[in-house]
Image (cartoon, rainbow, N blue to C red; front, top):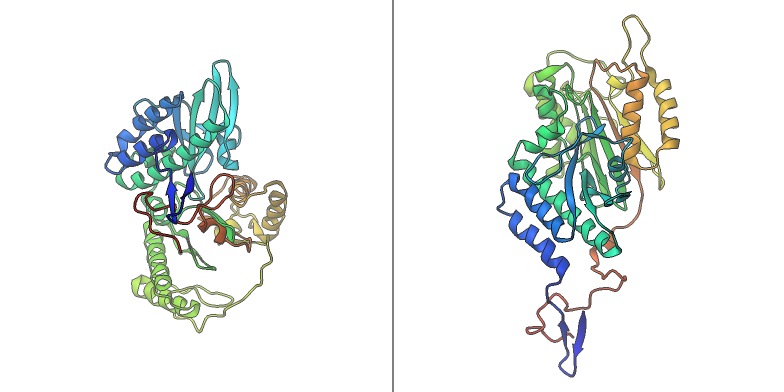
Length: 398
């Protein structure tokens, strides 16, 4: 709360520490140096302070089919929960809390959001739930998600929890390259998925939102196994280097072409337009498409449409278009649509995935994010000028 100091021209701000700040502050202060294995018991302790119990941290598996429990001291470890048929999965897909009444209280499922990327779900039980609980636990879940993502770089435990099947070396390389699978802003939303999740080798994607420009690259390296994974790694590295350097799109193609050619490409592929990078193609042909708000663009690699049984016809683009249209009517969000589309297409192809198959979906929203840079109270009022300074050392406000 801020109030004017009569006659002095200074603003006094109530800077006393409230219960919520203390609760989140303890987690934030300790997390900087805390080893990954102690994050779980600290979270359980924090939840216990607000009367919660039976804490579970559920992480999305690599196939995006299940939410699997993270093991840790004081955590409740049960069976993996299907994303498509569980309260935890509903919270995950909708990015919103779900409450389930139980004989001994209320089971809460809170999405773990790192930015707009879904990490998993925090589950806990309370005797009763009110709006103060909901607000505080929502913020606690956001902080927990950020900590999990940060600590993921220091440990293998989160990777092991998410892996429900053996993963090839090539697939591990590809997963380590990927940006967050989803991003959602007022301007644009994106979501991607790789399959087969545990055996993917040459497919990858990358993106970056710089100002009002979304940069997107979808990579399909020829071949299989480690050779394809290494080639994709070189391609992504060259693409990122070009993007970081501010190189134009045509020059980016040329830079990637040189990087791949210098690596070890010995077979030429035929292309209807510009040659794939690595073959010294001519000046690339740049196409433009004006998007309206709500328009979606689907990028995919050839493994999606060229799959076929021995001696049979390829899956083909016509079937792909039919399924995209059908799934698009049923799924609202970009993230849920790309996930449902991938799983539906795999079923329609008879579960066959002899080649990598990547989907990347972009929705142009065309909104503005400027309002997110204005700090405001819960009632919508802006924080008063000078509120960030000390009530004792506040300079006069002009």
